[in-house]
Length: 131
Image (cartoon, rainbow, N blue to C red; front, side, top):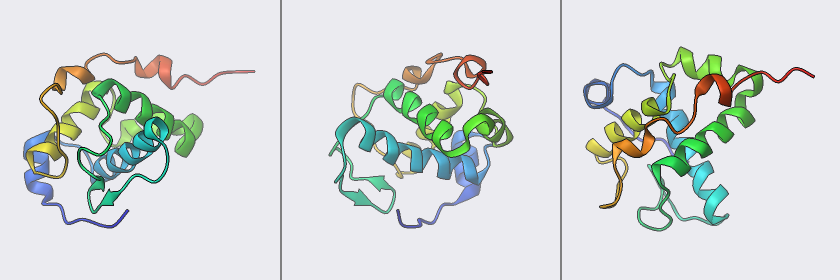
């Protein structure tokens, strides 16, 4: 995925006080989710998967981001996300809609920020399983 220029002041105004790493994680996690749901070979643009090629819902994206975080950070996933200010699925929604507001992502008419509300509990989703 190529690098895009982001006005961080505008992004924080649109989405909230998340770190730049949080936005990059969501961007990469979106590509991961699209591949997970629609398969490989998805056309890419500088901001991620090509718009309208393979849409994912807010719920699907949250679950894909959870999967991506666990793959990437393992047992530290919840800690890493928390350090970036992400503590609930609603935070994913605020980041996504901030990116939409700045024209970095697109949504369709059926999408709503409410789609990100309470998709899963972070304590349960990122619990350390003891063996």
